[in-house]
Image (cartoon, rainbow, N blue to C red):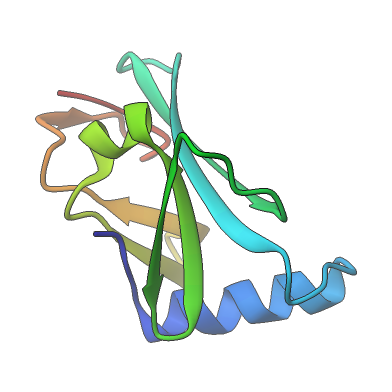
Length: 108
C-alpha cells in the first residue's frame, strides 16, 4: 500500500487541474535506477493501467505502481513539503536503508 498525506493530496489535485490533466489521470509512482544512492523515485500522471500494475487508493487519490517498483515502495507515504528547506514531494519509505541529501534517491 502507498499512503498519501492531506498536503500531498491537495498538491496532486492542484497540479492535475493546473497542468490540464483530467480526473482519468492517476498518479503513477515508480522506481528507476540512478541517482547518487542507486535508485530514484519517478512520479507522473498517467491514464493507462496495465496488467503489470497495482492500483492503490488513499484519500481519493489513485496511485498506480508497477509490480517491480512495488517491492521497493510497500508501506511508503507520499508527503508534500512547502517549507523553507525545500518544496516538493517527499517519499517516506520504510524500505530505504539510505537516502541522499536531496531525498531524490535511495538504496535498499
